[in-house]
Length: 414
Ligand code: 7TS
Image (cartoon, rainbow, N blue to C red):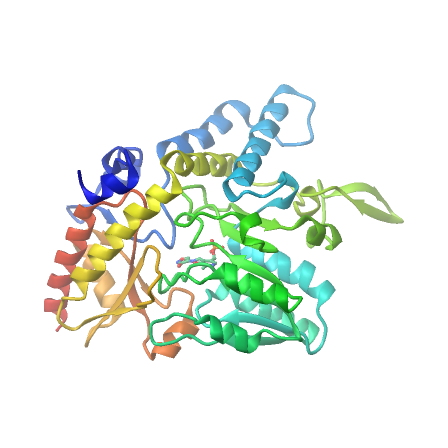
C-alpha cells in the first residue's frame, strides 16, 4: 500500500480526475497539466450539472415567488447555504452571507463594520503576506476614518512569526485581518493563536480563508474568528460566488452596505427597515445558479474529505519541492515550515513570465507575476515568481511533467 493510501483510506485521484472534463484536453499538443489552482480551481461535472439543471428546469428568482419554480430555486439556494454552514461549522445560516467572492466579503466588513466602528488613531493589524484584497480595503478604510494600518513583518522564509503580531497588537488595535494561507508563498499562518491575541486585546479578527478553504479544515466556532471570507471559485465552484461568515452579534449591529430589494423589511418615503440576517447583506437578485453550484462544490469536497485532499496535496507539494530545488539556478520562494498547495519559484537570470510562457508551450499551466501580493515581492526584491499550485485532482504525473518541463525551460533560458 502506498503512503498516500495508508494516510487517506480509499482516496482515488484517478477517479477524482475523471470528474473534471476540462482536464482531459491537449494544450500545444501535450496533455494539459493544470497547476494554477490558487488562482481558480476547475469544476467537477456535478457542479456544472447543478448549474445547468437550475437553468434547464428551475430558473426563477428566489424568495419572491409563490410559484413552483421560484420555490424550487429558493430551496436549492438555501440548501447550499446550509451546506456551507455545515462545512465551516457556523452555528446558524444567519451567519452565512453570500457575496461575489472573497474580495467582496472583505470589502463588506471594511465598509459596514469598519466605517461604523473605527475612528482616528484606531489600529488595524494585517500581515506582510496578504493578498491585495486584504490590504487595499483597509487602506481605503484608514483614509475614510483616520485609522492606522500596521503590518506584521515576515522573515526570510516568508513566514510571519507570532512574535511579530504580539509586538503590534495592543490597546489601540480594533481589528486584526490575516490570511490563513498565503497565495504567493503557501505559508500557513497560526490563525487560532492570532485570533486569541486579538481577543486578548479586545480587538476582533477577520480571517481571509480564500486560499485555505479548499485545503484546510475550517471550523469557525473552534477558531472563534469574528469574520471569515472566501471565494467559491477556488473551491471547485462557480466564479462570482463567495461567502462572508460573521458572528451574529457583530452582523446584527452592522448597517447594510448595499441597499435595494430583498435586504429590507419595510420601505416608505419616510425611511426603511432592514430584513433579518443574512438577507440584510444580500441586496438585489443574487447569483442563484452560482450559489447552487457552490453547495455542490462543497459537497464534492466533503465527500472526498478535506483531510484526505490535504494529505494528497501535501504529498504532491513535498515531492515537487524536493525535486524542483535540485534544478540548478532554481530557488523556491516561500520556505515556511507549514505550507499548503503553493510552490513559488524563481530561476537565476530568467524572468518569471518567460518561464510561464515556455511552460505553457509544454502544456503546463502555472501563474507568473506578483500574484496580487506586491509587498511580498518587494520584500524579496524580485519582480514576481512562477507559481505552481496543487488541487485534489493533480497527480504525481503532473509533478513529473512540471519538473521535467522546468528542467528543459531552465536550460533554454540560461
Ligand atoms: N485572498 C487571498 C489569500 C487570495 O489568494 C485571493 C485571490 C483573494 C483574497 C481574492 O479572491 P477573489 O476570488 O475575490 O479574487 N487570489 C488569487 C491568486 O492567487 N491568483 O488569482 C487570484
